[in-house]
Length: 412
Image 1 (spheres, rainbow, N blue to C red):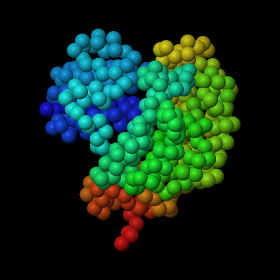
Image 2 (image 1 turned 90 degrees about the vertical axis):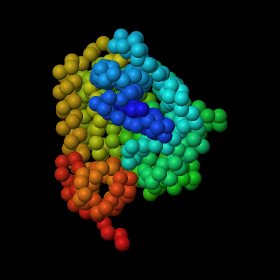
Image 3 (image 1 turned 180 degrees about the horizontal axis):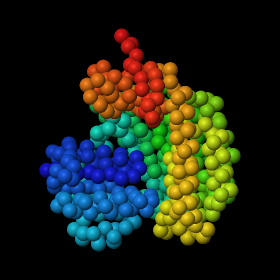
């Protein structure tokens, strides 16, 4: 039997799809593309923006036309089940809650819901789901529910499985990663989990996905100085204007954001810092946008993820007045993206002459490969017999666009 697995959206979705794929492969299924006429097609959808909704519908329609039995899960299916039924009433819809077990049941799979499988060189490990925040623009709490943490023993077993399979790096991910353990009794923190992973597993590198700035305390910063923790942190900023931050129901001020970034850099000066920014939020005028741009200009962030505001039904922001025209959103996006490219090039240039360790992800041919460094840079180098998942130390020699070039360091 053949199954296609199509995934949109966040790292949590990617992690879930990897679990689904591993479970299916371990029970005799082959994984195929839609063009290979699969018997089943599982689509893990996203609904974070209007574009995500559109992409989800397009994938569903393509899957139906392929003739496969279509199974749809993820945030779009959670919020728009009636719209999916209009596409084809035979589509099986699986709710976000307990989706792995539900899909396993559909395929008569038992006792495999934490199998350590990934087609990636740097697999995602989902440690938490859901969100207790109420950001005015975000539909995710409605689609994913309250924050729920995975038991440490399950996470550790999962990671040990990856180590046994030869993986060198894992990415800890969650819808709201920084709230890990708050729902336990007694409560735990993300730092408790990281300490357990460092102590009880031999995983070479641990990468953290997005964290809220107020969750980055001194204990976590201390842990980030471990050689086994990737020199990379992603902090959602969303706006550099305090009025807009309040309208967004964010829990920090621009000054607090700056202070935390400065604290991180004082302890880990070579860290790669990324940030999310939303442009064109209702009420964001020229002054508010200018405040955001000025803050980003002064911050030593390494890259930005920029999103034009997309009103989500049933959110507070969707009901707000003072909307920004789409043309102006696009202009602001392009303006910030120019700054983003300057920031990227500046950070990449600062790495020339340094020796960085990469995990190999792709081999271009027999003579070259591409990998990701601890500080989240793509580096291309000569392969020298390297295989996917292996680690190599690379002396960075130059930048080529947004990829660094380098030569392997012979440690023999």
